[in-house]
Image: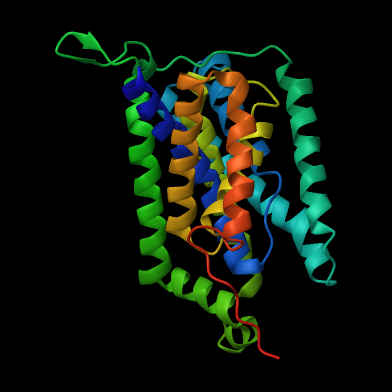
Length: 291
């Protein structure tokens, strides 16, 4: 049913968009990205499962603590895998963030086990119905895009109307001038990384009841989220969110009409074709360099 595929695609695309917003945040502030973003998503899902199912906590405090730990993981990524290399003018943070993600994936696999687990949710039990006809989608799949768009709007508002947002924009535009104005550059960058992994954690928490929870669940999600960030234009917050929705809808429609074996082939081929036509992404702008 195309309607259910469309709703599922919007929900899935919102997850890609949330993770891609994390790439946008860190790139906008520091010119770097966390290539362990998929691991951050997995961490949110695994921690929520551990607190809620293994320890028997209520779901809400389990989610809140899981997201807080995801944010702390973002601070760790910036402090261990990014700051030491950027301060020396090295691009080794590219490999360092990948390596840190692999370390986390394997630590979780060792502690959590290889067996996929199911995280039950009251919003993913009974499919929605309209007039007695089932839509083939769960309430959670409708909630996901609402949460994603709300977080994108909140991020836009914070970046434009708060002191921290002004400081972030100042760091983006001219780091030396921002430092002279007393803006704590390192703290601003660290907060951006914490928010980045927090957004990925939110994606993991929301998607966990619809997919099995396991240590490598974030690998493909992280790759697709980075493709979405580039496709939307990594310098545009709304651009990456819209690109995420388009990517998710495209995946769902291809799967529903042609089958899952064609999904990845066609979607990434489309990404290559779009970037060939628009190298700065659908909504990105070419950077102006002074010489």
